[in-house]
Image (cartoon, rainbow, N blue to C red):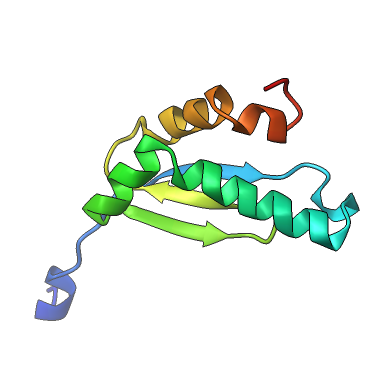
Length: 98
């Protein structure tokens, strides 16, 4: 028989976008910091990030040279966010022509 405390547990499904800066460890420390800051600016500027953040439905998990974003508002949010990153100024940062 479940207890009262366990009946209050709510489960949510999270949809994850993993982001990594390739070649990060080969960069000079100053370049690492600049690249990581630029990545944050690009990601935080995406519509999907801002929407999920405003709804309180975003979990950010930094990994040192990137991170994971867990969107709990829309199953398409990670893909849409990735498309925004690649479609914007993130292309040049990750080795694609800007």
